[in-house]
Amino acid sequence: MVSTGQMIGMVLAILLPILAAVVPYVCIHKRSSKIETGMAGAVGYGFLGYLWQQLIYLMVIVMITNISWLAKLIGNNYVATATVYGLVCGIFVALGMYWGVYLTNQKQHSIYRSATIGIGFGLGNIAWNIIAPYAMSLYYSIQINAGTYAGSEQIKKSILGTPAATLYLDAFRCILFLLIYMGIALLLGYFYLEGNKIAAWGTPILVQFFISLSNALIQEYLPNIASRVVLYIMLSLLAAGSVWLTVGWLKTGEIPIGKQRK
Image (cartoon, rainbow, N blue to C red):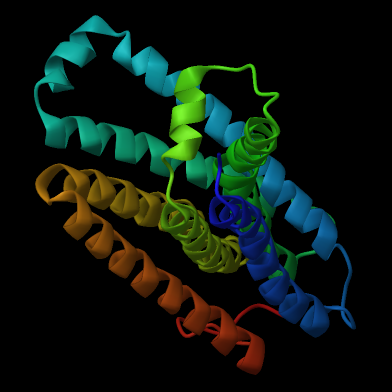
């Protein structure tokens, strides 16, 4: 039987990240509503941007692993492999975000819509990593408890063996990424509107590359519990910096690196 705590954890793991996205969206929408519209559309672009870049990224990773000479070159070197995969991940995150920022700024330049792209991008990450798998797990859990489950035993064991704490940690991780992506999109939008294409591309690539490479190295060279602690501390610091950047911008209308274009 799947415990009540596990099922509640699945529900909250889905709801909490979504609610976490509502708060910054409302704050940005409240500030921008008297000036312009299109915030909901920007969220949609960000959401779609995450989904298509993730799908293509996975296909590219499969292609890389099937290139024999490249596989031989990096296959026996964990750091080299993590570096290549991290760089590819950073490039596709930049592609997904830049696509959204570009489309939302075609008719009217808007730092508000640019920042909101990050919220949609974070929601795409939540849908991919939380909503889709946990909604299915919740459905299977109901069947298991009702005695009508007829699926794979491996999936059943996985559901029964997943502690509620893991569900909450996964939700927390997605919330942190949502906040990080919001800050990245804000900077990307700022640089894009200033005409600094190098910084606009470089910001998401470098931040995501740092996260991906650090995550891979932490998991490889630190014990399981220690690696999780270090990873969540790192993500929390990045998320805190993103929140500081966004709150400061909403209060003053300026970004610490320079004045935004009106």
